[in-house]
Length: 79
Image (cartoon, rainbow, N blue to C red; front, side):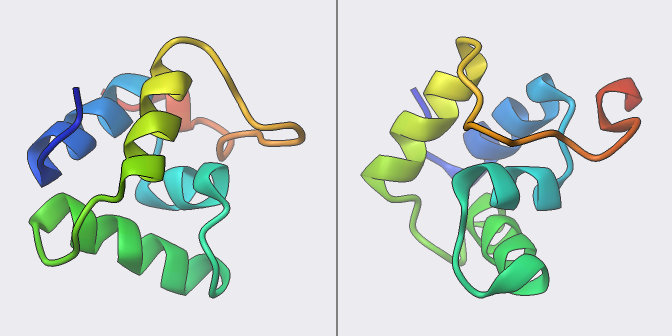
């Protein structure tokens, strides 16, 4: 279960995604820069991780992807 920033970061990295990928998959408001900033704030503990974000990320880990979402090219190749 994703409860802390490090858990969120670990989940994102397990998906092979960048913070921007996660922001786009979550469809965070405010555009790419603001969405990426919000993900980084959640990962660092400066922003609370909401229940819906937790549920969505856990769904992503089980193979669900939002309609039309594609991670950045090569993001899955990161180690």
